[in-house]
Length: 240
Image (spheres, rainbow, N blue to C red):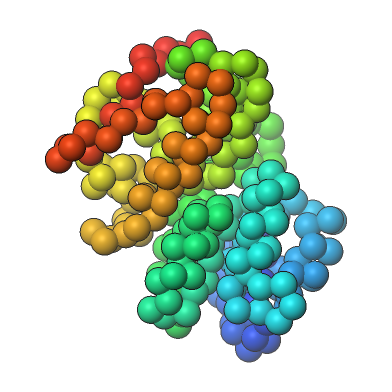
């Protein structure tokens, strides 16, 4: 059975690209290879891409630049960044500019599949081809979030664009508002089994989400740090 999810493998190494495409297609996913950023742009102009497996080191426009450009234009595709083993700086920068997850090279095929399944599970509502059923709508401090469409409006009615990871993190706070949540709890709810105790992605996501909330009307200080305890979403939340 073919999954309707489209995965773009943006990788300049033809051998790695072909091996990865074969692996994904055997799992039933629709996967298309792109040798560089320009090839990805041509694909994205024709079809909606749900998940991008994006290598950082590429000729021409590199993966970090492509990631930054996609997020600047409000693209909602989930980005799984592939980084050189041990290159922590690239991983942190990738997460800072909008990647949803990262995977070090060389990766084990089983881990790649597990990461992709975890991401697609978290974002399954927005990746469905069929019209999604009505989702839960949350209100807080004058803001409004539709959990199915991922539309977030600030207190002045202005839209705030969230990546998949930022949306997952905000949903964790909204469902447990005015409670102190530990870093481990947030890791578990947003990344599941793919998380590790030293995973920095939650710290980067927290920073990104805080900045986006603070940029909107009435969003300053919604997420508070509790010394020695974790994090607290301070505003009361209601389902609309």
